[in-house]
Length: 274
Image (cartoon, rainbow, N blue to C red):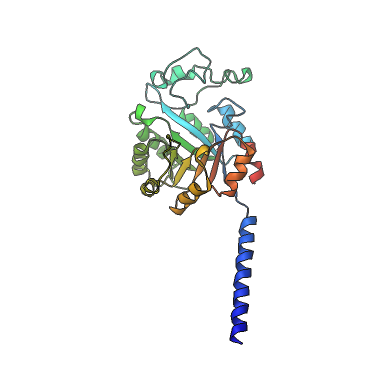
């Protein structure tokens, strides 16, 4: 009798495990859909046209880049110069322009004539328009070039009461010292550290352990991603957002890996993950 009970118990346990695995395989996972500089595949990046297009495509978050002008104003632009994403009337470094000067540049026609007149937004203008409508993934771009950019960014968020830690604001950067400083100022806002291939160097477990004191997200470039890396990130209790995704097969792979977010130029690529 005891042998029969043992056998039935073993059959039950095996059946339970198989059903559980099948259930997990069928479980839907929907990473956050994050519009890269808005919808940079369809509109001039980091402009209101691009941000509104991304909202139309149903993003959960807008990813933006923040730098600082000569007169200490925070602006939303990716490159450290205005050369690539303006109409050519101005060239040179962002930090050598005042806010008024940089907003006199045309930030749309370089992409397509129909976007003529789009301007480089200030962070203040961006937050006035989009904070509360959608999540924001804010990258501090080259903070070593801009003394006080961390403090000024924190002040902008405090002024608008965007510091509640409700997951509608994430701040990220490659600059780990700046992220540590930001975390000291606003510990309730989740931090993401950006990482990319540096030769053959990968993210070590030592790196991951060091991140846990101030970071919530480890955000690698898509070219670094594999199952082992994502598993190690999750093993250390960290989340991950992947950048920059441009292909449908990449979306599906990342969904299967259960990443927490996907940054993409084409937010409609993510429709299949709903």
